Image (cartoon, rainbow, N blue to C red; front, side, top):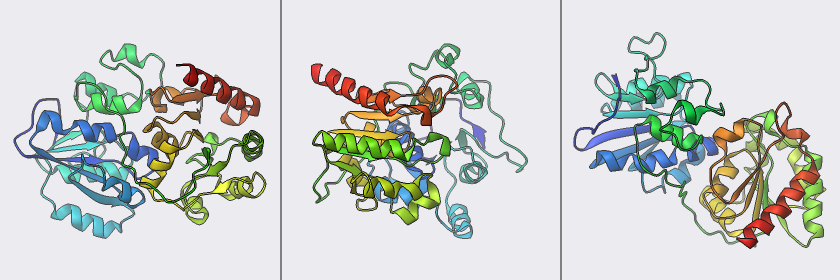
Amino acid sequence: MHRYEGGKLAPRARIALLANDALGNFAVPSPVGQMLKSPHAPCEVHCYTGTRVMELATLCPWYDRVIAAYGMNPRELAAQVVSEEPYDLVVNVENSARAKSLAALLAGQNGFVVGPCANRDGRGDLPYSKTPQDRLWADPHWISPDINIRYPFLKTSHISEIFARGCHLDGAIPPYNLPSEPADISLPDVLIATTASLPEKLWPIDNWIQLVQHLKSQGLEVGLLGAKPKEQAHFWHGANEETRIVTEGEATDLRGELTLPQVVWALGNTSTVITLDNGILHFACSTGTPTLGLFRNGIHRLWAPPVPNLKVIEPGPGRSVNEISLEIVIKALNDFQVRLAYF
C-alpha cells in the first residue's frame, strides 16, 4: 500500500471511505463522500461505517454500497474484509486502532491510502508523505486558531474541509445533504438534544429544565430528541438525568420515536433547534433551521459547521460548557431569531 499524493486513479476505481457510526462522525465526512467521484469518475465509492447509522447511510446517493464495520462481530467483519478485492483508494478519517488496521486490510498490497493507517508489517502506523496534505493529517493541532495560515489551501478550519483537502480534493465543500423522510407526528416548535459523547460537553440538566419552562411560557412546545433511554446510556453521557426534562420541564419525549432520516426531516421542519455539540447539531446544520449550538472553547473552531443557520455559544478561554448561563442562551436565542428575521 502507498500514500496517495494526488492524481487520477485508474478507470473504474474502487474507493472505500471509513467513518465510525457516531452521528456527528458520520455526518462530517459526508462532503468527502460526495466529492470523491468527480475527480475519479467512473468509480465506485463504498462507505464502511456502523449499524447505528445504517438506515441513513444506505439512503445517501453518493455511496454505491454501505458496509457495517462497527457493530459487527470482529470475526465476521474480518472474514468479509478478507473476501473483498483490495481497494484502489482507502480514505480513513478515524484514528482508532480498529480503523487503521481496517484501512491497511482494505488497501492490500498496492492500494493507495489517505489518513491514519497501520503499517505494512503491523508495527506502528504507515508514515505520512511530505506533501502539505499529509503534513495536515499528521498535525495534532487542528483546533489551533492559525491552522488556515499554516495551511493556506484551507478556507475554513472546519473538519469537513480538513478531510476534503487532506484527500487532495479541490472545489467548494458541499453541505451535508443528509437524506430525510417525513414522520407522522405533531412537530413541536423547538427541538432540543441534551446528551453528548463526553461529559465535558454537557450543560446542566437544571438549565435545560428552566430553558424548556421559559420556552413554554412563550407559548412554544418543546420536543426532546435522542435515542431510546436504555440505548443512550451505552454511548452518550447525560442520558440518566435527561428524563427530568420530560417530567419536570414537560417536554415532549421524542427519544427513540423517529428513524434517523425522520430526525433530519423533523429538524428541517421545526422553528428552532437548541443542542450541545453532538450528532443532532450536525444533522440540524444540514437543514436551514436556526440552530443554537453549545460548544467547548477552541473545539468550536474545528467542529462548528460554517453555515449561516448555526449560532455558536461557547464559554470563552479557560471556562467550561457548564459555566454558560441560562441568561446567555436565552439572549443568544432572541438575538439570533431577530437577526435571521431581519435578513
